[in-house]
Length: 300
Image (cartoon, rainbow, N blue to C red; front, top):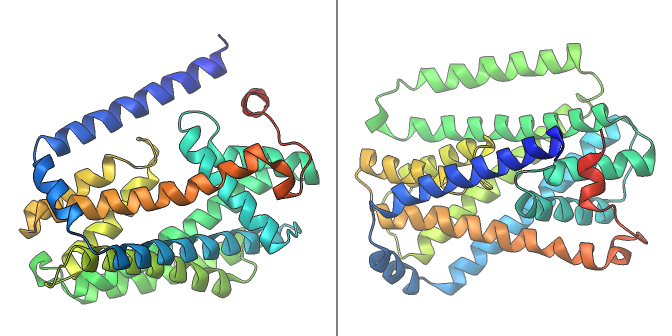
């Protein structure tokens, strides 16, 4: 086994271990029977609306990434880009310890369009960074509406304003290719994260919740930030830990909190599985054949 394959295998085993440990800690703290009872009484209409809002957020996210591609003179048809985005989501689940969906897309686009992998990687990085900016912005707004945190209102406001200004000038000064349509890209990023918050709200409604939403939504956003750290399988386990200990802090129903996390994860996983269709039918993507994952994994 080469060092490259050994490293990928080690990463995969580590992610499985961390995910397993996190889920073990979660399910030793809550009752599976109570969890099942809460879920079986959920409203399927609101679950569908949550699925729909998440799916639209994925479509906008793909559209946002395509805007970054345009900054490096890579012009992909929107439908083609969306299909490729779904394919990448599928590989993020099926190849969690190896190249992942981003690595696969970089390899595929580099070979097809003869564009440097470094430029494509930068596009994906700044695309994720715009999403993180939107997450932090919405999180800061929620902080204002949660007095229990005892954070003065001026702190999140000043942090967001100063951070956004610094972020904007750094992008325009040092990364001009990726600063293309800065406002439009970040408006899309806000749309993506707002729709995912709506998804969480729909899940809460599906669980017949009628209390204060802001603590649950804050935990949802914090769990999304934690999920970005590639230490577990698609953030599974890590997000549930945030909800578990966050629900203790805010004195929330831990079963409802965990279900928000698990349902949102499974919604994402179901949407990701759509991308598997293109691995079986490349012509639906407009390609005769797609690269094998082993080929991508061994490419430098």
